[in-house]
Length: 85
Image (cartoon, rainbow, N blue to C red; front, side, top):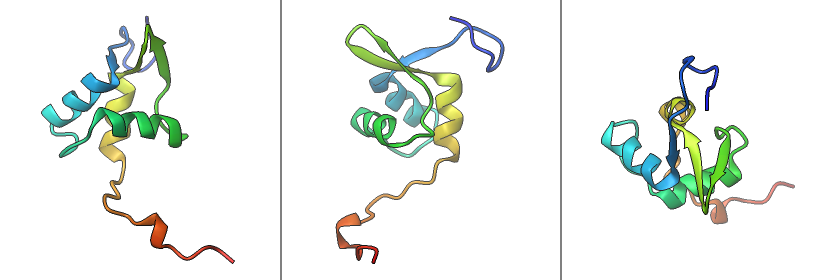
C-alpha cells in the first residue's frame, strides 16, 4: 500500500501497537489503545483508519505527527462545565 506521505509504503499499525509504539518512542508519556480508539471516533483530525480483519489500523507516518502536535487535556472535567446559554 503506497501513500504520498514520505513516498514509501505505508506502515500500518493496529491501535494496540500504535499506543505501545507512541510510548516506546517518547511521542507521548502514556496512552492506551482504548484512548486511541476513542480519538479515532471523536476527533475529525485523526488520521485515516482502515479495517484489517477485526482490527482497525492507521499509518504510522500520519499518526506520529498527529500525536506529536496534539495537546493533551488529561483530567478535564466536562461534566463540571456550565452549559452554553
